[in-house]
Length: 426
Image (cartoon, rainbow, N blue to C red; front, side, top):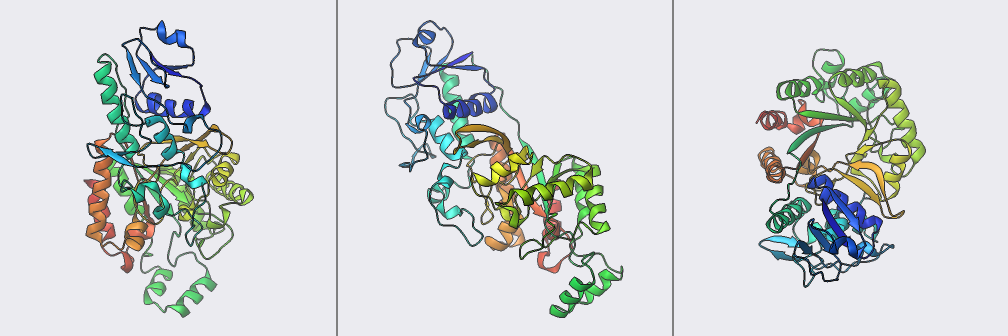
């Protein structure tokens, strides 16, 4: 049993202790604010206070104020390094050079996204605003690195301490924004599309002579049958079509059949439409549509265009019964938005409480490589391998996002299908 002493037990401290000590290190621990508990204990102790203890079985971490505040305030953050590892919230007279609890809380809760910031064209928090980008650690699962560093220090101090750490896990996920390029779009949409961009390919697909260029579903299924890698599919089923919401209508029998066929082999989640971002009634209606098609309760989601606003988007998801969300990442660059490669419970800073919503961060998306970072197929493959290895080093969670259109036979994405095959099979 590990004892964690603090002058005041707060919800913030309880949250981050649970993540670091329980979820990441597998330790049994107890939080206390009673001095006698420490003086009388023979168990290992973390002293998270400015107090001094005469006992030897102790690690001292002088706390930053963040975990004892109740409001959302601007925080003075100055980054430095130890042995190439970036950190902030430096503290004097402690056994490690920074407050790992406060720093982890700051990154994990996306504290900076509650403060004023300049939004991008889609109304999103941009990666350029982030501490991770400004200080060069966006491409590293920094929290996992910190925890590994911390566990080594604990192990040096308490050689008999046993850690139960997570294993490396790979989840391949797919966003189905537009299931087909031509198929099942209906007469008017196809005529309009043909007039804008005359295409013999469109005619051949509609006549059943050629496969739709976005149709990669059998290919994806085959890959996962061979590798047994876990896969998640997120379907856009919004009934209102907009500039950014263009999927095939679920009134089409072929679309409903695709969803049901996918459900036979994989887990399905909701891809809330672009226009649903701050509208709980739209999210609720889209969830009902997907549940009616599948006959299952839908518990997983990922925001279309990775568009979410804290805290409203996640509060809405909780309200409609979503338990797991996979949106934590950027739609403009690959990397670790929350500086972590592990799932974690969302902490609602506006209500100061740990919620029931578990977030699963992704670090790689095909659209970021292709559209935003302007990479070719070879560069994208190298980036995929890089992030996989970074997560493997930390025995962490590696989640990718691919779109079905990237893996079909559309000329724009030439080489992607073969590259992904090579990656998945490696």
